[in-house]
Amino acid sequence: MWTTENRARSHRSKLRYPNNQTDDEFAIIRPLIPPAKKGGNNGLMYISSTGC
Image 1 (cartoon, rainbow, N blue to C red):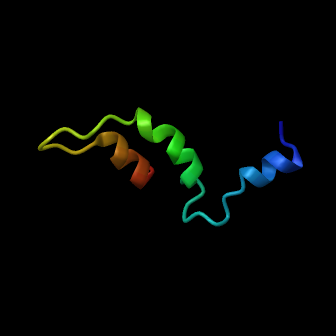
Image 2: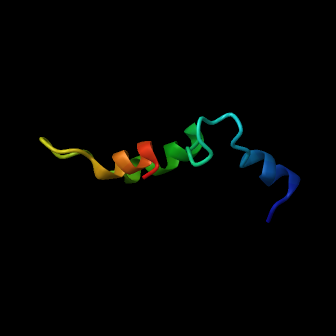
């Protein structure tokens, strides 16, 4: 629910792009991202970094 507290926590004006994750959000999902394979690119990281 959008309370004053929740709205402030979701504020994105200080991020470069509005869809970027905050450091706290990324700390939650980082353990779920598998390590990149040798000789290849990590598609999930590409999508996350480019917003594609």
